[in-house]
Image (cartoon, rainbow, N blue to C red; front, side):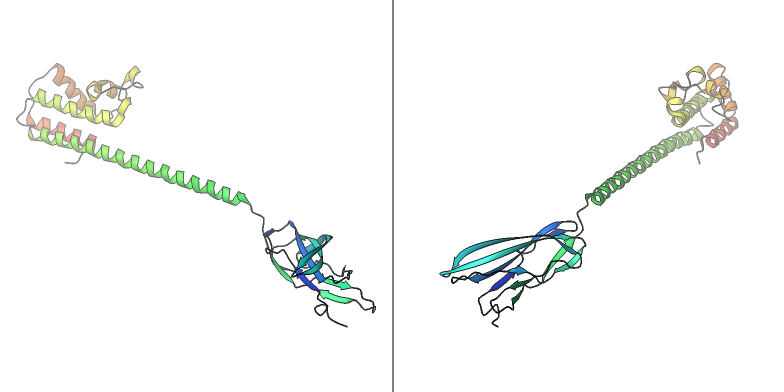
Length: 273
């Protein structure tokens, strides 16, 4: 019995432009075309197999006949379109499709296509990407927030250190003048340094009594007497009394008394010499 090739019968499998991208769960079409030279004859082509394979299930089959002219010869063809469901992922294989062509001799011609590979991927899931983007943004904003906080903290420390150094310089000048300056003038200058310290420590809350919540607008407005009465300046009681005596009483003081007051103020303000 002659072979299909000897009779001019050919078979092609798969789309002309290659297999499409397939995702698990998709149903795709897989065409197989049987062609022959007419020469006044007709052929009956009967599918004798299925497209079932590992990870692939045939869910439908249709066929369509056509005729064309090639190189002056009339060519007849039958295209069998298999509908296949992809049920697994990976590099899968569409099996060779088998067909039978009945003959007058009783024994049919056996015709087979080539096996075709198909890649089946997982469906695209935007959720991990979206979650990753949200997490990345959160990390970015958290990093920016921490960087901003660290910068603010460094700036606050630098400002505090600068203010502390300015107070220290003023205190060192007072130390040099402790024996030569007028006691009243010296004490009032020390009081202004202490007010600067208190205002820097309490900020806008450097008020006292009923006005404590409102605070003072400047260091000069700080009321040390009221703060001591409210217990806000523990340990400063005797020094604040000396300030009050200098303002309202005056009187000469020995240099060693001023030195002791200076030392006590340095200790209470936490300033090292």
